[in-house]
Amino acid sequence: MDSDNISISLGELADILKAELHGDRDCRIERVATLQSASPGSISFLANHRYRSHLAKTRASAVILSPADQPECPVFSLALENPYLGYAKVASLLNSVPVLPSGIHPTAWVSTKATIHETAWVGAQAVIEDGVSIGVNTYIGAGCVVSSQTIVGDYSQLVANVALCRNTVIGKRVLIHPGVVIGGDGFGIANNNGIWVKIPQLGSVRVGDDVEIGANTTIDRGALEDTVIEDGVKIDNQVQVGHNVYIGAHTAIAGCVAIAGSVRIGKRCVVGGATAIAGHLNIADDVYLTGASQVAKSIPKSGIYSSWIPIQESLVWRKNVVRLNQLDEMARRIKALEKSQVGID
Image (cartoon, rainbow, N blue to C red; front, side):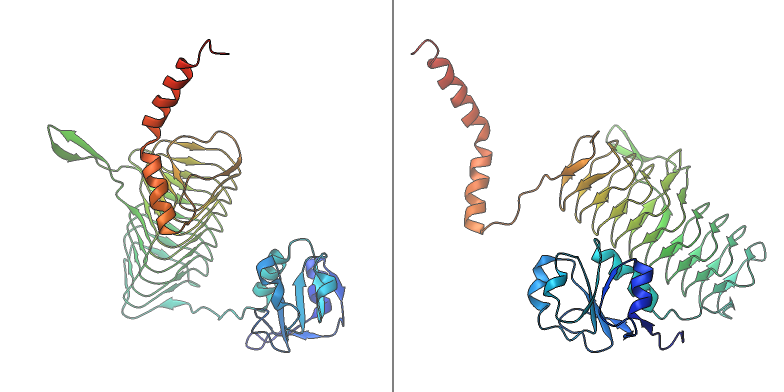
């Protein structure tokens, strides 16, 4: 396939996805689009019932959907149990990825004590310090700073203006978006009669393979032991990961989450946006925290957890807050009433 004009047949896609094909195997697909914006040559998808009303009017050449929705589809289709995953795979196949350059930009500063693979790229105004190792086909974008003794694994990308502080270890095929800081000091301070004394942060950060870290996320170095991000973790934009945190493999964390120090999160967890997790807690494997949850105790069992009030009309919310503040007094009155009813038939 031409990398600038990718095209693939619907039959090929059906074979790759192991999907049930309804339509012409030879139909050519060139791009992915929404049901509303699709045109001939596009493939769309239906993975959320909220968009089912758009199916009847779509102009897509084909739609990826569930077997239950297939009878309502007016165009060719690929039916499978997880249409969203199918969409993700097709989008990857049709995504034209530019060939990355290799070499060192003339404005970059690279230590003579660093090891840069000949296939890697170091972009404009980037800084590579002593003892750094940059792997095969790794991309260090403009303005990045890779501090001393840091390792960046093969096929990883630092898009632009990424800071990797000393002794950080980045695995293979890691994608780090602009503005990320990995390995900055954790928030370690001790109180000395009202004066805060800084605690040296002596650990580092270890990031596994196939991790993605969103823009302006910060991951602090450990105080004594390393902060660890395991393989396959996906972190959204503007997430704060405190020192000594451990995030298990294939966990996904949405934007604006705050994780305090020494939290341990298990494998395959999902943390909804704007969730806050207090320090020194343990979260089991396969835990789903809905958005804006406030986690103040450990969660030892897998499942779905929530701790925030869904949106309400402002007047209703104000009344409920007043009642919430009266709960303690109401509990005392109920207890007194129960005592007064003892012995009454």
